[in-house]
Length: 135
Image (cartoon, helix red, strand yellow):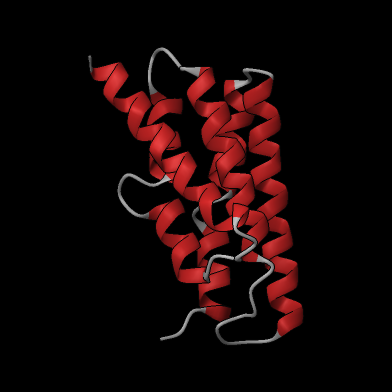
């Protein structure tokens, strides 16, 4: 039951992540950050799943695919503040790390997926937020 509920929630989250993109509307930075990082978002869900004893690789692959879509969309936005060149560099690196996560998930490589997931958080967040987040 618990796994079914989690699976249904995941399907809903992935559908929401793709809805704006399917309508040719680029989600805003705020929408992307919410879908990726808020409680119940893709980043916390993948973090928890990759730390579990038994990894559900089908779920991780779906989450990583949705994460890539959102990461790619991030770079299509103008920076909220700061220089465009910096924004382009940081969002490109973020999207590349998201693709590395997706690749590792496809190979069922826990170490690779965990390393890519770690590169999507921490210092990556801090450096981008320091340069581009509205205060």
